[in-house]
Image (cartoon, rainbow, N blue to C red; front, side, top):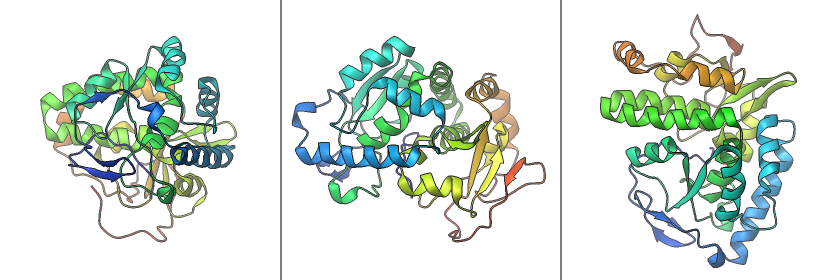
Length: 299
């Protein structure tokens, strides 16, 4: 299973190497960089080195270039204040430290104002391969680099503004918008001239899903279709059954630029689509075998 940071959901607390911390809070906190232990920095270094080696030829060019431009490396956990200097100069985004998952409206408001919430604590050494809640590695390594890309940075701000509006419309609109985030920001694939590549943070921060999403015969890989995605349920407990593929970040921005209000109205009258389904009108890049899929569990 990938280590994911989804649009927020209600969770009361999480046991971490920092103790019992809240993960449903509006608090913005300073990164306690001086308090990170040697184990914390070593965990970051192990994860960073492993993923960078794995992502060569698998992550999209924009992600790898952006991460290099930010100056991230394996030596120590990056400092938010230093990254903010680079990020602010590139696209006007700012990182803000948080304890964990935020209430929906707070999350959307941060994005709409070009602030990206980053969980300050990092997993314990024995959690290298899996942690249930998003930690610093997932947020910082997985999400932040593409905020250096102007088009993707604009998409994230537009998504936040759309989330504020969807929150006012109601829970069905929020769920549809959450599916868009899940299948793009978290688990999106992109077509490059040299093949399919990863850009979703839930994939690039996970060793297992980095391999599975591109190389396994089990999942479907389907061309991007906005309303199809907004109807498609997903898995939070296993690798994804379906991945959606964009042609470019420009395509993603253009598809999501219009007012979603009429889209929400249309989708309200349509049934949702199970995570592993393939439909007649899909652009099927790869039809999955479904091998190893767990039954049920779609949300």
